[in-house]
Length: 143
Image (cartoon, rainbow, N blue to C red; front, side):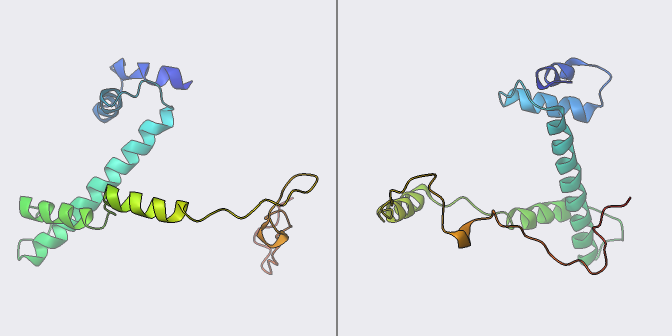
């Protein structure tokens, strides 16, 4: 299936409701063409995030003295807030502009004009073979 048909699959009634919801979410954000794997990745993230939140909420509820396996709104709210604090917050735009000016004011080194393709120094190139000894032969090809 190509990416152009993935957006059209949202109208298919044989899909689970979660898949249709992801399709609607993508369409509402102006995404009309996407790889079918995008829906799978978003569903994996959604399920993992929801599961983690509910497991954290259960732990918080148990810590608050509620019965094991009981999840309440306060536990879910606390779990969401604890997860949100672990995400990096976007820095203020003026700070980003200040740092950009600071780094952009540093002049680039002069180019040395030589014949051929300009390459970085040998120590910064990743063109040399990088072989490592594997004493367990774990990564040898099976014949």
